[in-house]
Amino acid sequence: MHNVVTKSKDVTLLEVLDRVLEKGVIISGDMVISVADVDLIYLGLKVLLSSVETMEKLRGSPFISPMQEAR
Amino acid sequence: MTLNSVVETDFPEEFVEEMEKSNDALPRKIDANPKNVEKGLAKLVLTLIELIRKLLEKQAMRRVEAGSLSDEQIENVGETLMKLENKMEELKGIFGLKDEELNLNLGPLGDLM
Amino acid sequence: MKLYTYSIIDSSKQITEPIYGLEGACVYNIPYCDIGAVVSEFTESVQSKTEDGVLAHEEVIERLMESFAVLPVRFHTVFDGRDGILSMMRSYYKDFRNNLDRLRNKVEFGIKVIWPSDKIKEHLINTYKKDNEKVSIPDDSSNKRFIKKKFEEYRIDEEFEKKANKFIKVMDMFFSKFAAEKKLKKLKTENLLLDGVYLVERGKQDDFKEAFEHIKGPHTGAGFKFLFSGPWPPYNFVILPKKSDLLEDSEQKDLFDKVIQHQDLVGADKI
Image 1 (cartoon, each protein chain N blue to C red):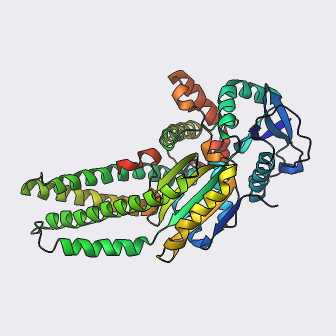
Image 2 (cartoon, rainbow over the protein chains, first blue to last red; image 1 turned 180 degrees about the horizontal axis):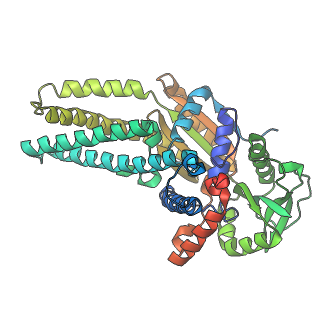
Image 3 (cartoon, rainbow over the protein chains, first blue to last red; image 1 turned 30 degrees about the horizontal axis):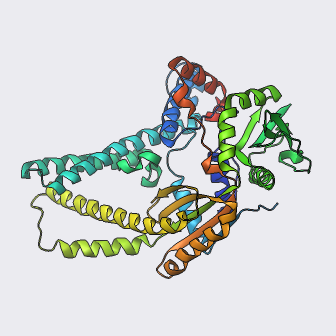
C-alpha cells in the first residue's frame, strides 16, 4: 500500500491507514486517479501492460531474465 | 503524538486479522520489479479467471435450483465445472498462489457474486 | 519548494495557531476565493512514508477540524509549488465548495462487526441436511456427485448471505437513526459481517454512540465482536467527479505515458 513502511499491526494504525491512503481528496498530485474499485482495476491493468512494454523495450526482448542477459 | 479519534474494541487482534485478510485482494500497485512481475501478473490474471469461473458455477447452481437442467445436462455441467476447478488448482499450484490471494473485492459489483 | 497538502478548508484566512506537520514544518493556508489548501513546505529528504508520517498527517487534519470544515486530502499528496495548488483549486473549486458545505459540522464514525460465522455455517449445514433428507439429487456418477456437493455449498452460501443481510438490516436501522449519510460493506470476509462508515452531525454524536451500545450489548454474548472508531474527518464522504469518466482516448494515452515516467506508481525504480 503506497510503500508505507509499517511495522506494527495496530488496529488504530490500520484504521488510520485505510483512510489516509485510500480515501479523502485524491487529486493528481501524484498521478493516481481516484475512482471506484472497478475503474482502478482497469487502470491497474493498463498500467501493468504499459510497464511490461517498457520493460521489454529496455531489455530488448520479452521476459528474458536479468540472469540470462548478463551472460 | 495523540489523535482525537479513538478506536474502541475488546478484540483488536481479531479485527486486525480480518482487515489484513480483506486487503489481500487485488493490489493497487503492481510491482514491476523483474523478480516479482511474473507472480504479480499471474495473480492478476488468475484472479480474473477465478472470477469468471465462480460466476459460471453460480449460474449453473441457479439452473439446478430452478430444475431447468436435464439429467444429461447436469452430467455435462458437472464434468465441465470439475475440470475447471481442477485446472484452477493446478495453476494456483504452479504459481504458488493461495485462495485468499485471489479474492477480488469487487466493491459495487460485489453483488454479481 | 514542494508543498505537502493536508486538507482543503472552508476559510481563506491565515492559520494563527501553530500546527506542525511532516518534517516538523508549520502548516499554512493557501487561499483561493473563500476556501484554502493547508500545506507545509516539504523537502522529502528523509523517508516520510512511515507510520510516523501517516500519524503526523492525520493529526494535522484533526487539529484543523477543530476550527474548520475540512476535506481531508490523501496521504503524500505533494505539489511542486504554489501554482500547482492554485490551478488545482481552480479546477475543483465548485466540488470543494459543495463538499465543504455538505460536510460542515459532521464527523465520520466507523463501525465494524465480526460475527460467529463458523457457528452460523454449522447451523445452516445441519438445517440443510435435515431439510434434504427426503429430497434426492441424482448422484450416480462422479460428475453428478460434484454437482450435488457444489449445490449444497451454494445453498448454504445463499442462506449465509441472507442471514447476514438480516443482521445488518437490524443493526443499520439503529445506527442510521442519527446519521446523515452512510456507506456499508457487507461480508468483506466471512467473519467481517459489516464494515460501515457513518456521517454524523456533531450534535448527534452522543446519540449515535448510544445507539451503537444498544446493539453491542445484547449481541456481544452471542459471539459478535464490535469495533467503534472516530470521530474522524469525513474521509469516506468526499465526493469528487471520477477522472476516468472525463478522459478521452488520447488523454488516457498521455496520462499513461506520464504514469510510466512516474516511477513511484509501479515501483519500477530498479528497471
